[in-house]
Amino acid sequence: MKLSIIFTISLIGIFGFSISAAATDSSIPDWVKNSAKWWSEGTISEAEYIQSLEYLINKGIIDVPIPIAEVTAAQTMYSDEERAQSFRVTISNIVQPLPVHFFEKFELDSSIAGDAGDPRGRMYDFRDSPKFFLESLPSVDKSAFYDFIAKWMDAPDAQNEFDVDVDVLDGTGATIQTWAFTTCEITSYGTYLQDTNFIYQYSGTQDSEIRDRASFSCAGVNLETPES
Image (cartoon, rainbow, N blue to C red; front, side, top):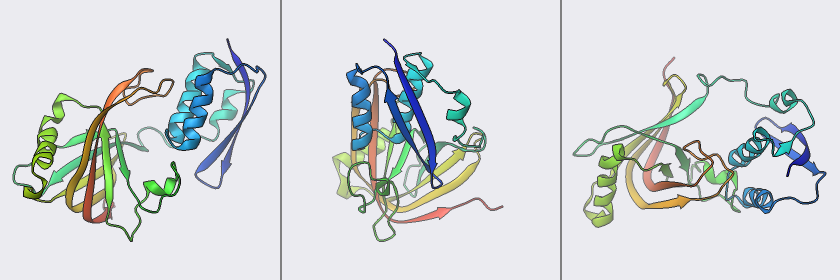
């Protein structure tokens, strides 16, 4: 079954956009409704929700009766080489240096967030002690990182605080900005199954995947940019 949906995409201010849809088929699959519900509740991000719609369009499940050019006109003007593509994490000021690792997600954690999905929760409130989390696909190359976390789980009071640099990299590997956290500790860690379907996952597949998340609390942070 196909859905015939009319989309309207428009800019709101500088950063946002809105989507309105009018379905000509009254029988809408439950997972479509769930995706919209999860987005409204903040369970999935706006980017993930848009990607799920793009997947449906690409697979021919949804017919879009307007030229694709009209949909893509509001997208970023930057190429993959110019815009942010990955996070490089360096943990330092420790006895045994850790290798540099790349993570799929880096996000700040702010106390000023209101309801679930409030974008202010992803910002650094200058009045707070800086907190953030790193999320990734568990892999064997991160074994030294997992050993580091295990020591904090076994005896957190016996561990020395450390520094963390999170570099935001463009498509060429050049640094756009660096979040330099100082005097940090690990506050929580977990491995879990992300089994929400019809959402582009970190692995690029339309399937469930295992992720892990580590949370950090620090005494200070500086936002640094490369010297021109």
